[in-house]
Length: 391
Ligand code: HEM
Image (cartoon, rainbow, N blue to C red):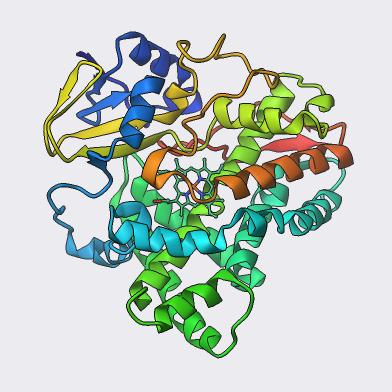
């Protein structure tokens, strides 16, 4: 197996990680990424196989040693379905899925349309940043509504979530850790008191359903209820915000005609945006047994990095993968993961993109890039610092 070195914090890599992915993929299904000391794969078949293989999972084989200053952060993670395997994962995920029925998600379409229209109309003439004017408020306010959290909390939700995701970044510093812990404590304190308040005020929202499950006893503890709300509120916007940003940048850079956003084409265009430049690039799994995958022998306790954005450009699957082509035939993407932890919010994210992008361009058909957009200096999140446009 080949070893490759690439600093995940090097500015050139952060701006364009795709040449490295190509080099890595060409070297075989697996390579050792020396900077992480981690076996990784950007091979589409290997990524999908490992996501779906129950002999791999997110819970580490050996419980990690948690430094005391990070305890409040990991106390929440310990109850997050994303960090758990069955049977706890199954119980938590099923409770959430009850509220994420396809009917309920489809029912959000009028709300998403109204909010996207309001935000598009609020965009000033001249220069502006699409992220703050449009891409951030839309998913934050929709996920807050779905949960039943007041929408005027949106700025706090954004702040807490931005600080908490710092924990997953390469080159994380003590200052980032302290910010993440402070945000976790503030988020938990808000939800503890908000859940108490909401017990007396049931409504047609996810918090009410989760509180009901908690009050029935065995189904959900208060800590699980809080961790689930935090996971949904954070996961419910971080990646969608940056997919809107990356997507609009790609549409403008490639001079994609507006017809790509017409009703009959929009689904394909959104799938291509999700394939071409996704917002989350790496997830990891632990091997629970000795397992061979495509010639690589994993030992129980080994960790593997799955490079989603690399898998989405595997030339064994996609013709001319570095070309943005909204007309390509649909194939499974790695963008939302696969298997047990497949993204709960994928239908919501897709719906938001399919509604928001056409509305944005209908109201502003002359949108243009101002300068060259720069990605934030972080990995494995891949989103823009800002997206300066003119209209
Ligand atoms: C474009 C937007 C999004 C992307 C790219 C994305 C990506 C992902 C990926 C890759 C995973 C799987 C991680 C793994 O297997 O290790 C995941 C899981 C998850 N996502 Fe998303 N997501 C998006 C939007 C959303 C939204 C809108 C929500 C909530 C409403 C959401 C909620 C979740 C949850 C709860 C999980 C954990 C599922 C589990 O552990 O069973 N995501 N997401």
